[in-house]
Length: 570
Ligand SMILES: [Zn+2]
Image (cartoon, rainbow, N blue to C red; front, side, top):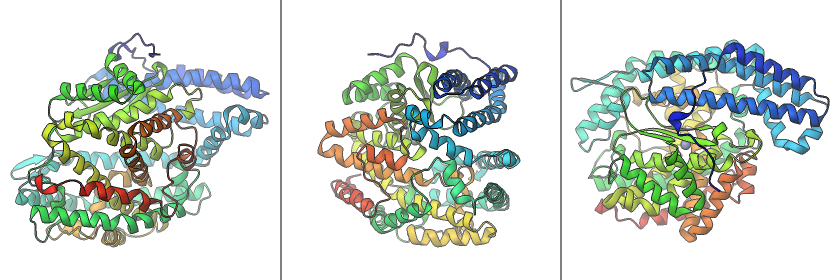
């Protein structure tokens, strides 16, 4: 049955939250819960709380989307600022709410109704927060914003013009080697000029996080970092074992791919910037404009199955996608939700590259999962932890393979090869970022130079092809400063690799039996976040990447697929 919604996105009301009203309402809801003496009355109090939170998060989501679509609009800007100020206040109330529930004498009875995991999530979030670390949390936000501003505000000189990082990025992939080299040198020079600033911001972040961890009773930040990401059924030891599996089973495969790439391109003594160029003839180009690509996506989602057809038509009918680049729009792309309307939203900046198609598949996968999980009654169960979320999006990229002839025309095979090779080559880089962060938080007092040295030694093990002869800043191991996740969301990066290993499984299964694999995928989407990562994999019959030997089993068939392509034709 089609979901009922009688408004398009433009008609969603803009409700700017007032601090007084919110505090009043939340005080009332907390009091209601405090007065509960049984699981039955508490269930009702939770229902009231959820209803208000659904409204509030929808209002804040509408503001965020309106603002990112039109950052120059003063009304939206003010509304967004208001939300930023209110977020910590709301988080504090949510914390109070969890504290009461987890300590309630009727907890056992409620667990029967809401499930153990509901309470485990609350227990975990309580272990990551205490009023005594609020000053550190505020400072942490300030520092990550400072990093974003520094990197985002980069004005880099290149051949007499000034560029930001994204703009300059285009030249580092140029088919002309000299252009790639000069662009890489310009970037390296800029990073070198700001190295002290980057190093200082990171050092402060590391010490802050270490001090928060110690205040909360942890040995260092590692376990706290894991809990902040809601990781409940795996730990840093398991992750280390997983990295070892990648090193053994994937690093040699990726190295072979790089060698082949350089042979095809005819480059001797390749430097790291040479690997940005996949094919002599450049990257694959979509076969049409935004309207054409949305039409392709419509056909694809309709063909895949009734659930995805209904989903994509809902997105189109209610104007839930803002895809094309426009002056005044925020950069990047994302998928978010309006829970009150049971509606997802996709935001992006199409620029005529293969990335546009990726948005329709990747963000489309996120949105499809959200759409299919809205019927889950307990809001906390609608969306899983972050590594599981990326399975929906990355698998959708593979389910889209048969439709690439429409999206790319003659470049379809080029895209498929690039997509799969990139996905494999990403894994060694992903574990580099992860291993580095573990070392950093286990040695919080190390100097910047020591950090760079360690980065370099990890890189030498996992991505030994990277040479930095012409770029001194990167040569001494400072390239990690460009990876924003290292600053903003510690330990998150490995999530992309975990999800990739799961998406590969869908890819292999769909080549054997497309219908069966799709059914399994839809089931996973509908499952939402009803279990932590490893349990979610078990429930949905996916191989657990942490189990020894599983990475190799997943990677083996992919090599065969890549061999089917005649790269010399590209
Ligand atoms: Zn994603």
